[in-house]
Length: 198
Image 1 (spheres, one colour):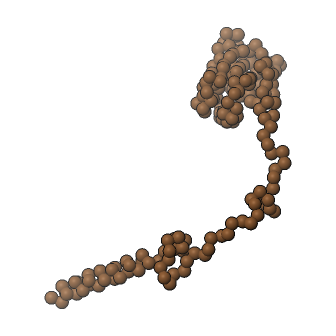
Image 2: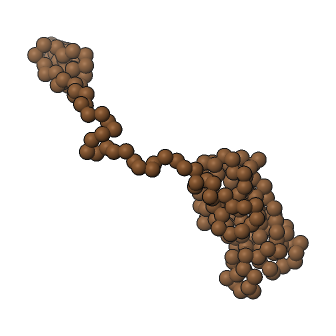
Image 3: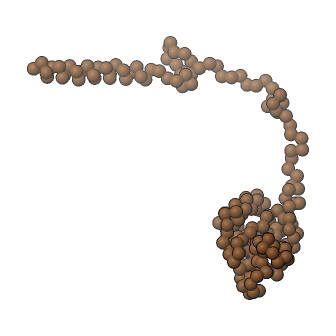
């Protein structure tokens, strides 16, 4: 009998503790909420709101007008190359390995920057020229140059550049950047070159 009484007493005591602590938990609020919703009497409230600044936001020790900060458009106008395939245009060439049209990691990184540049200049049109070194037949190099130009075009399209703005063409080995018969020259000539027009 005493065991049953002790068990009921322990359960009743636990319920009493829970019932007494639950209402107390709901009384305290963080100061920000107490100030916003009105604090119960006896609790601290958040301080008054900060007064609006007396100085305009365009003047002061930390704020000043930027001289010559207006957009001029010269970065776009001057960066378009002519329709010829001269070097030094706004988009750097992409290099390829020997007998390959596969994009390297370096080529992908360059093309990702090109895609950002093109997305900022929606009126730009690009001709992607595929080039090869002098080794191999004319037919082989024309086909390889076309594969290189298409690989670049497809990757730019996958990055969000509209395919309507991109044209691919192959020059094979007919227009070498460096005419020397050295490995360094061959490496320079295995490329995709970009001609930007409007």
